[in-house]
Length: 629
Picture 1 (tube, rainbow, N blue to C red):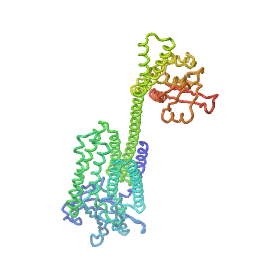
Picture 2: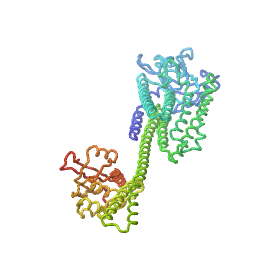
Picture 3: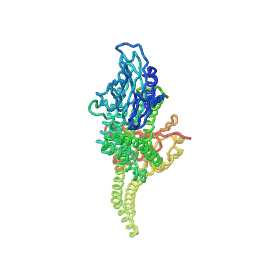
């Protein structure tokens, strides 16, 4: 993602180096004056004019008129070559061009954002006039009267047909790209809204529509879209107010101020009322130019105050642990880059072009894209949390079920032990045969209770994996203890454990107790359980690079493909009876996989089922651990 933004910035900077405005020196004596009273006459108040700065004209919201005066240097040009006089602002308001001809000043044409697309002298994004060839050949003075209330930031340029069309085409391509990207984000997040049933995506869709509309209106794209029907640029203040209000609503829900800034949220939730009050006042008092200009000044103050408040709150929310606050702050960084790019072109720090003029638009698109990616990330987090919750619910249900089983199953063998123990105590003279029989019953019942207790231990071991401390473990000692603990089970089935003790003379990174009881013993217990009596279990160790591989192989009944797939997907294997009817919990291999993950190791199972190949059946479990010294 960072690479994409870097490439976009590089592309814009490269394109901006090609200036379309090389004919600015064809104009001279550029001057202007601002008539707040609307009573001055620009035709005769020549002493009121002041030179236009190199950065252009910059006049805030107002209810007055702006007069611009200049001279076009006489040129020897082709009769068929069209030239244009351009004010590089999409919010020029109503502008009228006057040319000094024989007999005095004469109105030539009208244009600007206050007129519909088709009513303008030249249907374009900027305030533009065609200049007659005869006037250019002779040279002379021109006068432009600007009537409007919007902020005016513009330069005055003199362009040939080719230069003008290139500028126009670049603007069009940028707007098409912007519109297509916004539309794609809109469709994508509408899909997420209907799929995920999360209100935040619906809020984002509304936020995207209003903010994109405000940005497109500010650069003249909406005027081009609606052509002769309405003039959206005259309603920019409505779009700006609505966008500011929805920015607050979206930010509250996106960052979750209620959770991470509960006290501040009580005040922030009322903040949208401030820009919306401007919205409704403008809507109902739209006929008054003075009111519109005043409201424009207010919205210019409200917007930075509101946005600065949101950014400040986001910083504190980030410090309080909000996972999406960093995306929000980064999106503002992207938008700020676009704004700085625009301002750099406006003040002559870089060459002015259609790309620098659209810097805010491109920055806004980057902001929206980043927020959309953050929402997608949010959905991924929610899916992960949902799965974890489902797993926790399943684990709790399994635990409850096991407790119920324990309470039921332990009662029977315990009553047998109690009964026979009482018989032994009461009947002092008992034949050796009957005494041996009762001892066997007690022993068998004890084995059953032992199996039930192993289940409890296994469940507790699952929780213990959360706080493991990995340390070097001497593998030779672990294998020696495992063999000692399993000697009775090995004797019962007359199974031989074969391994070369010298191979175990190494250290691995693990946790000693769990590696012994929950990994090695679990695997060996399974191998004994599913092996036929009088068979063998072999253990091999391989050292390669910084890894140690332990392979435990038996010649037992093996597993089929479904059981292997079950282990690979869930880490569990359904409990089965052993070759002599031994029972189990089905948790053993799940524990092995969990602990190996905690050790940052790996476990693989290869098996051939007895049903497929009785001669070559068996299972090999391979553990891979980090080697250490």
